Image 1 (cartoon, one colour):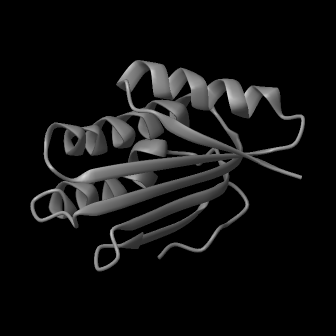
Image 2 (image 1 turned 180 degrees about the vertical axis):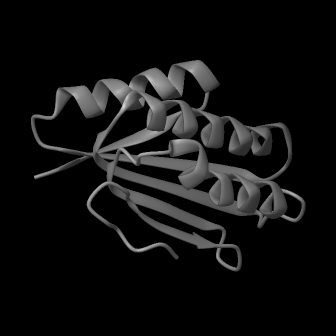
Length: 121
């Protein structure tokens, strides 16, 4: 687990439950350095994934560099769609935040994974 800071999101990686949550704002000074341990964890998790894996994204903001890393991690998880395992991606966005909704739609279309969009009021 990584606690949210001013420029980095809260991150929860739970291999036992097949659960990932990333929430908050993501614009670290060095997005490669910040996301590297997360991407490494995903690689290890995918060696023995749970039958059901759930990804929850609850971003209020992310910059372009973070966007590239978020897409990279979603692409890694998309390999589960080629197996008997089930992948659920929940994309939360604040009411009226069309930019975050559109970003989720963009990610979903690039990786061809159906996202479940959940508006937070």
